[in-house]
Amino acid sequence: MKAITVSESTDTDDKAQVIYGDVESPELKDGEVLVKVHAAGVNRADLLQSQGNYPVPPGASEVLGLECAGVIEDPGNTGRETGEEVACLLSGGGYGEYVAVPEGQLMPIPEGFSLTEAASIVEVACTVWSNIGMLAGLKEGQTFLIHGGAGGIGTFAIQMGKALGATVAVTAGSAEKLQTCKELGADILINYKDEDFAERLKNQCDVILDIIGAKYLNQNLKALAKDGHMVTIGLQGGRKGELNMGLMLAKRLNLSATALRGRDLADKANIVSSTIEHIWPMLADGRISHHIDRTLPLSEAAQALQLLEDSAVTGKIVLEVAD
Image (cartoon, rainbow, N blue to C red; front, side):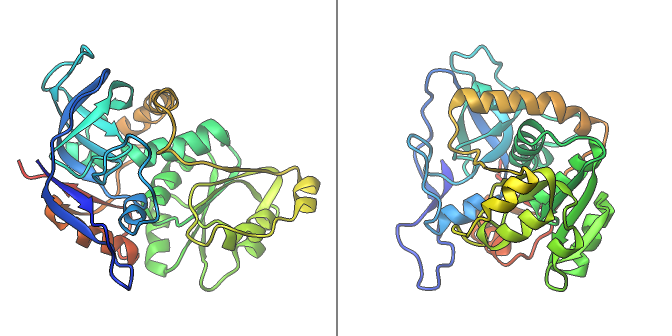
């Protein structure tokens, strides 16, 4: 089959090196189905993997791609039906014509969504709900800060926060991106290039969704309210920072750091089930919509990753697989 894999070497400038070519089709394991991929969402984790900065978990496909949507080609021993349309949470393999998926990571196509639209929503829905809904427990009336509000995670998190009744604050790097956040429902708009979000939101944030890491650590602590909870899911601003434990004690703060890809099958199945229960109704009734910046053919995955690296997109890029 045709698929996107990562080359063994990279340029001196560390640009993403990906290969579009022939690989062996996946073989099914017990409890898996074979899905003919229609479309795959592009995520920052794919970019990091292409640069050699995100190792593939043991046993996962070397093919890029953490989410897709398509049609079951072979149900294996699961009892699922051939021809069933599904969205899929993956540990890898989405950037290919076929992918093997554990049954517990299959999701129905949200009502009113196309396969391409569904492919853009799986990873962000599971990531945001598992961290902000299941872990941090965002509630009505709380203040929710999202860093990178105009990205794939951010555009989804804004809508989910509003659907849950929170006041949503965002950071982004341009007036255009902040306008997008406003249109999606964000209440407090902060251009991080011009304003210190920690001063603006000092002691106000009940929940923070952080993709930056070390660079924002002390500012995030300052912005958190008493009993506040910060969940870090990315390290775009570095891995190591100095933590003020005294401030944590005084404000009774909670800090969590999570990743979705490396969780075991049972954990992922639990997240998928909870996401379907709580988020799919919001997709069906329009409280949350997809936000696709553009679609590209699978063969242009390198261009898609470059656009992501350049911060040249708002929302998600989706790769479509030729029939």
